[in-house]
Amino acid sequence: MRTTVTLDPDTRLLVERLMRERELSFKEAINEAIRAGVGERPDVPRSYTTPRELGAASVDLTRALAIAAQLDDEAITRELAEGR
Image (tube, one colour):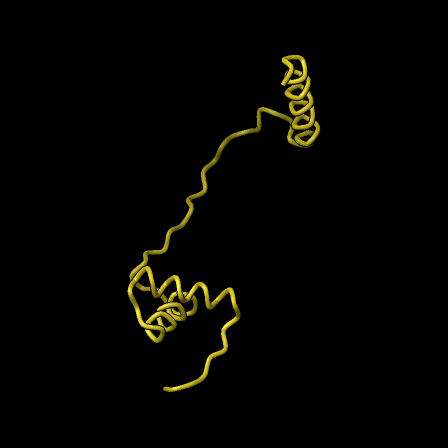
C-alpha cells in the first residue's frame, strides 16, 4: 500500500537512526518500527515475575519515610562534618 506519512521531528530522527544502524531503506525502517511498536512479537518469550514470600518486615514500614529522612539527615550531617 502506498501512502503519505507526516513524521514529527523526533520520530523522523528515530527512523533515520534506525535506517543508519540497520542499513535499511525508509520503507523498511518504517515497517520495522510499526511492527516493533504495534505488532505482536511471537519470537520474544514472555517473562513473568514469580512472587515470593519475604516474611514479616523487620522495620515498621508505616514510618518508612521518617526513617529515610533520618538516614538522609545523618548522611548530610556526616558530609558537613567532613567538609564536603
